[in-house]
Image (cartoon, rainbow over all chains, first blue to last red; front, side):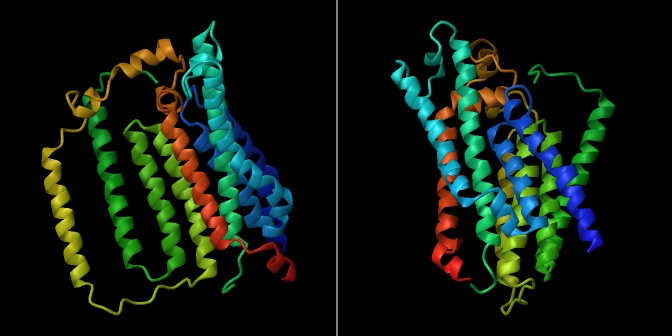
Length: 142
Length: 193
């Protein structure tokens, strides 16, 4: 029991906050260094998986309820495709980010990349959490 | 992400080659051990090590984005998912009931064909290789003006090939929906216990 306690303190207090922070860093620093929405989503999701491994699936489900994770899974794709629709409404082609800012097309590119990477990150993070919950939520033979 | 080729001292190249050989030997060794193993728990963990070695190799090949993905997905999430699967099934593989000679023959023939195919491939790092000429090397130059993000990989994935990445995101979305439909227990059943 004592050992489990140490594991919980180390994981919850030391590791998980930094994993989440690192996920955010990879998400928003992907333009400048290695990484991007996909890698960030996996890292962010891995923090929840770690939480579920240590505190159990039921505790993790309370942190990341199905009613929140399921819509986020779809919202990510929606943000991505929605960015494309917005560029069309602004007079460009689908996913032509130059249309997002007619005065500074390069700024439009930055905004567009930010938006779609955010969408990718959302879908991947929610997807990883859902995958793990789906597998771990079943009992043997059920 | 500096695109200019840099002069590598001769000694550095030799060390690179040594690390290449070491990592590839470890990769092959890990693969053989995984195949021969009957305990699936250890095999699942070894696939994680295999992915880490792959990630190391990608770093040496100057592909940090790929290495990142390999380490996070291959070594992290995939290993956990495999362990979760093992907790639902059995942790020991059944010994093979049929002779393994025919599969071995198939693998050897396929491997030999692949190896024969490498004779036609350009040498590693050859500047004349098709991959450096096509589709258009000017992406690297144009990114600075047109997109202005330092990481060209991000510019290509999110902007020049934004349509492809939308497709990939949709693939992930669809795959997760599939897993949910197959594995998730209906809410009524869950409440009943």
